Image (cartoon, rainbow over all chains, first blue to last red; front, side, top):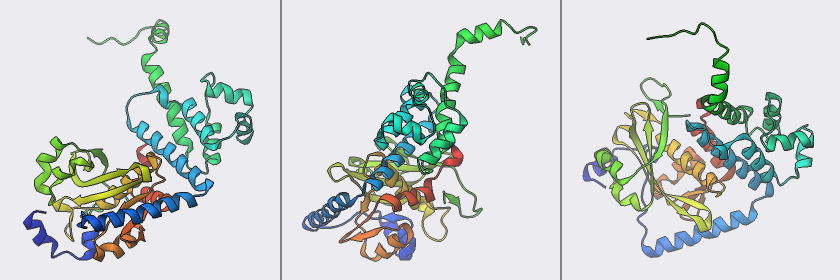
Length: 175
Length: 157
């Protein structure tokens, strides 16, 4: 560490240091090895003790964060579409589609159409998915997945743009 | 609690991004440690928006076989240390980011660090770490609480 910093740090309280730093450890190789073994043992023990509920919770959070990262991007990506996430959700739950459809009040055919992109989800389903996921996957997250697809279609569907444009009269024209 | 400007108590938008060696060079005078040495690990920076000022750095080691991420080093920029700091919550956001990354990698939010002895109580109090021998760690529900406290970006969605 730079000398001037070392001097400045001497005037800070422990609380202030903890609010600004995690210092590099200066353990000897032997100490470091022992510390690594300690935490490794703890880690493996914790993994063994994890309940199915805890694993499920973590998996859902992973899905949630994946959605959030996608929302930060400006682009639409098919691999982050509503059907893909719905399928991922059902897979995480390890449920049969028939059982899942029943739990969220859908006909199995409708669920199948949603999963293949042949039907669109509505607000009612977004709310049900939020409730079903214990509030982890919020209704607006599911909506946003669909909204990104709609935005992409609006931007890229030139056939409909031309077709609908042909119905417009007296359009504004600027030089 | 996102990043707050201490003088106004206003929330400040920010993002946490991977930092390359080239990006470290121009900011090295605002940090006390030699961050070039951390490039062997994964380095991320917290930058305020819209001015893209890096105000905190974190160096992470991925122990994939143990499903854990270790915080090797974390440092706030010199304007953000002590009573006169410009922004509050920088370290909390960076630690929460490490937890989020741990969930994303399928490590169940497990993040560890080797603390200085005199700071152990503060890390436990401020971030709810648990002590395991020489190390501190956080995981699962507690890690998620930290993420909700520091990184909940629902407003931004």
